Image 1 (spheres, protein in one colour):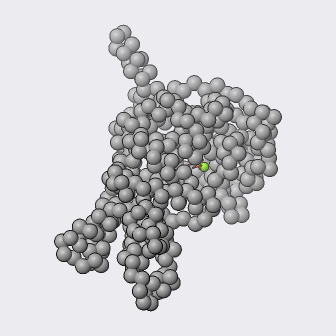
Image 2 (tube, protein in one colour):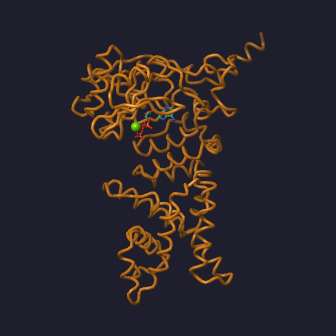
Image 3 (cartoon, protein in one colour):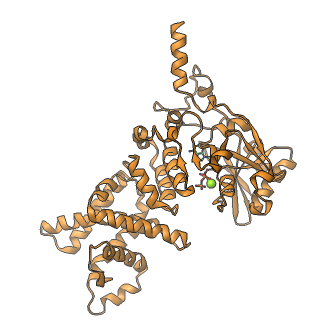
Length: 411
Ligand code: ATP
Ligand code: MG
């Protein structure tokens, strides 16, 4: 009996998404105000084709959220009770993708809509005695997510309540199982289910919380925020390619500065930017990074081009500078010293931050141009102007001057 009570208490502590109580609210068009002509025609075509074939289909996730906030959705997702094979057979231009999470990409014109079958809780979430297939690792991280479910279960396995709204373009109703609509109106970012369990299942959700709060100008709910600091080390178990993708999304969200500041206060930047701590602690470095991120944010708001290579070259410039000085102090000539410094810094990054090697060439090019800017006599400076990385390298030079590393007149 005591064991039973203890196990009950223990399990309550570990409430997962599948224990979440959902209560469906249907929000009519008059209340939510989204109109048909705001929706991407491709998404409408996909939902109506599925519905005509007898399936249910909804626009879901970030697109519904963004429309309610008067933002332009970046991409459209559709959720349906049709299986990937059903979907595939209804759309000529479509293909099934993904292994961990099978879904279908449907193309219309230049656009792609992601269509996924409603997901449910994995078997070991439903029944902890089922040990046939392990769906989580020993930290609780979800390894598989391919169990189909119903619409309500699909809402519950999503990350935040504001990301779990379903919009039916046909009758223009929003299906809200988790009070996401209210949270949007009150600008509250709330995770679905027990925060700790949900972060253990997928630590990237902690980064998504920070990014979405900055992007949507929302407050992270207290319960949702509380476990983040303690669970930050779990990010080390996330495959580096996924972490890298998420980091790019964050840095190019148009709110990079706010995100990085918030990551830092929550202790989430270790492992993500193993050296950001060090960099931010140098008085010059902090100013430099702040200017660089602000620049990136402004460029994105003005819809100007940005590149990961440029941003990484900028974020790491002070590290290179320190290593460069160190090699020169040991008697190396400036250029060979710079070469050694660049290789040293990039090697560290390959290991920790997992900047893929494909960025090396462009990052090195931008760094190598820095000492050349300082030689301003003769024909050399004019040759620099025609260099393909001139603009990016020059932008770093501007930041070097603005941050006080170099005299302003050099730029
Ligand atoms: P944005 O596209 O603006 O970056 P988004 O919320 O649309 O934000 P996507 O990566 O496009 O992000 O994901 C689409 C939807 O899939 C989300 O709205 C959410 O419902 C669900 N989702 C995404 N990532 C996760 C996750 N890690 N855990 C649970 N659900 C997720
Ligand atoms: Mg999206």
